Amino acid sequence: MPLLFTGFNAFGQHECVSGDVDCAAGFSEINAPVSTQNQCTISIGWRYAALAFGRKLCLRGLLDDGPNECVTLEATGDIRALAATDSHCLVLLQSGQLYRVQPKLQAELVAVRLEAAPRSNSGTKRSIFGAAKAPSSPIIEHIACGSHINVAISSENCVYSIPSCLHQFSERQFRVKQLQCGHEHAVLLNANGDVFTWGNGLRGQLGLAVLRVEETPQLLEALAGIKITQIAAGGWHSAAISAFGDLYTWGLNCSGQLGMRVMKPGGVLKEPTVYPLPQLQDLPECDCSQGGESNDYCEPLRVFAGSRHTLLIRRCGRLWVSGWCKHGQLGRQLRNLSYVDAFQALEGITMNPTADEVLCGPWSTLLHLKVSLD
Image 1: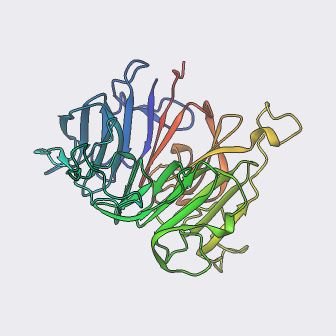
Image 2 (image 1 turned 180 degrees about the horizontal axis):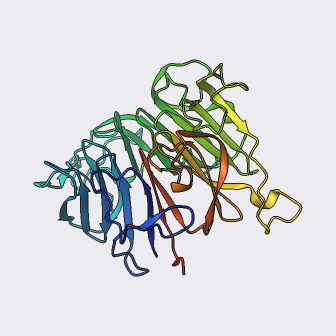
C-alpha cells in the first residue's frame, strides 16, 4: 500500500524512501507505516503534512525553525479525518469530537468548542424530574478547511463556520456525502446529488452568475436537476462529475486548472480568466486498450483539486491532469512546463478507480495506492 508523492517538498513535508522516482509518471514513494491493518489519514498543507494512524498524529515539515521537523501526538480516540492549513490542523475523532492543533514542535491537541445549534420546534428537552437538560455537544461528521475558511458539519446537518453555527439544513432526509474547501470557499454534495456552495465567490468559484460573497450554503442552480456524484474544491476553482460521466469546472483558470485554454490561438491574447458558471468539459478520448471503440468506458469517475491544479481518474484507471505544474505537482513528466491547459493522461501509472485515493496539497499531489506497484 505505497504512498506516492510529487510536487513541492522544500520543507521536508514528506520523507522519500529514495531519491529516485518509483514510476514512469514521476512519483516517489514516501516513508510511512501504511498497511492493510493500519488505517492512514492524511492532509497536506503548504509547509507541513499531517498523517494519522489510529490515535497517533504526526506533523512533519516546517514547524518552527527549519525543514524536516517532526512532532508526534496521541489523541484520546481513533482519528477519523484531518484538514490541514498553514495556521492549524483540524482533527476529527471517530467519536465525533473535534480538535485543533497548531503545527509547531510544542503542539497540543485542543478541543474545539462549537456554538450551540438553533433549538428545534420540539421544545426544551427535560429529565424525568422536569429539569431542563443541558444541550449536548454536536457530533461532527465532516470537516474541511482552507487558508480563510473552516467548516464542520454535524450529525444534525448543522453547518459550522468554526466555531459559529451559520446554517442548518432542515430536511430530515438530508445527508452530506462530501465536503470540500478551497482557500476561501466551500462546496458540499448531498446524497441526492445536489451541490451547495458558499464563501468568497469573487473569482467565480461558487458557480453563481454574479461574483459575490455568500454567507450560507446556496444551491448551485446551474447544476440543479443533474445528479452529481463527486466534487472538488481547489484554491479558487471547483469541479464536479455527474452520474452521466460529465465533468464540470468553474472559477479561476489562470493556469489552466479548469482544463480550458489560457491563451487564444496564436498565443497573443488571453482567454477569459474567470468562468463563474459551470463549464461542461469535452475531455479528450482515452487511448487505453480497455475502452475498445467506445469512449464511454473511460468516463471520469472522481476529481481532485489543489491550489491551481486538477486531477481526475477515469473508469479505466488512468490519471488525467491539468493546471499549474511548476513544482512537479502533475508528475515529473510535465515539470519543464509552467502549466497544462488541457487535460492529458499521465503515462506509467494505473489506479484502482474506486479504491485508490488522490490527495492534493496546495502545490503537491499524493497517491495512496491500495496495492503495491509490483
